[in-house]
Length: 169
Image (tube, rainbow, N blue to C red; front, top):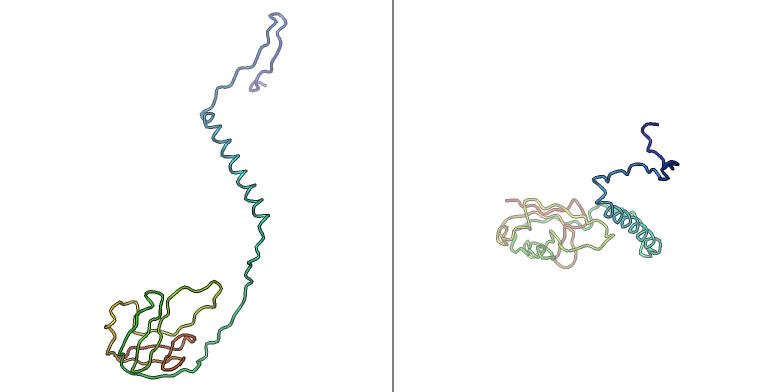
């Protein structure tokens, strides 16, 4: 009982109320208003966020889908020749391609893809780098190409991981 604070008592002889000693303020008391405001802010934010989330309905829900993409050769054609022209447009959201003889071969397509798009499947670029801004670097080089014929004299190494453009010299 010695550690307990005395309770107010009434002294009959002096007609005074004896009060317990007042505790001295602690070092954190000047910060008490900020602490209270912080607690109220956090609680209020949580309640408001919960109420807003409860009222929202997501009508734009994407359902997960599984898509199997076969890795089979589709119209695969192998040919070789000399690179006569290079188009580095993929550096600005276009298509990078090389011209081998009279055939254009798409090696890299730039640009954004829409959300939920299936993954792109592309063959390999062996010894050629379309990130090089030097358009003359590969002109005159001999290449071997295994690609899919698209339309006209156009080919692509997309749609199959086995397709490639390979520098031979």
